[in-house]
Image: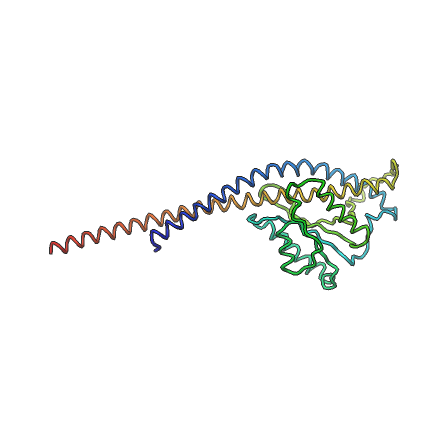
Amino acid sequence: MASLKEIRTRIASVSSTRQITNAMKMVSASKLRKAQDAILQMRPYANKLQEILGSVSDALSKDEGNIYLREQEPEHILVVVITSNRGLCGAFNANVMRKVTHLVFENYGDLMKKGNLHFFAIGKRGADYLKRKKYPVIGVRNDLFDGLNFKSAGMVGEDLIHKFLVREYDKIFLIYNQFKNAAVQILTTEQFLPLVIPETEEDSRTFHDYIFEPTKEYIVKELIPKSLKIQFYKSLLDSNASENGARMTAMHQATDNATELLRELRLHYNKARQASITKELLEIVSGAEALKG
């Protein structure tokens, strides 16, 4: 059995750890409330815009000049990996990394061998992982989550759109955690470009002869890039809310585990203290009996 001093040291250490994890849980809960409000307010607007864009793109798909719908056998692919800058958030980052590994070896292994599969990292944890694996990383942005806003996200989104338009990449994917609630994050692989027109059942599809105002070219030039930047910003908001939810849940579990460990340590301490007192009493009694003899 461990000595009383060792048990006291462990109790002090676990108590300190519990205070830290509990404080981190409270901070994450506070950040989660703000991040959750942001994504819940953005999601209906982004989804409706995507729906409108899908309807318009269905009509525009017949136009060979619509470069945002360009489909071809992919020879160069860019994967945008969205993770967090810090750890202590459970499997939040590990799930994304597993998805990246699956994508590399199961889906695009041939392109990886040719050096045509590239990565863009948003978040320090993802960047560190990709560099350790020596994957080709063309860019890293660890600053986007420091005061996340549409302006900074839109600039990155615009750069990604440009890389597609100049045919630097044939496809661009986003891998991130979609926020569902504080305890659940949905790992998502989303095709950013070319645009994916939502599929509908043939019987329920309604065909419209659209009148474009001011012009079809204006719609392609203005609406589609704006929608893409909003979708990219939404993925960052999703990831940010998911991170804070995952960290709050992880710190809550860590605090509960520390509380249970403290209970067990105090029980062991009391048993060790009782054994020590009993031993001292026996020594005193034995000494008194020896003096009588």
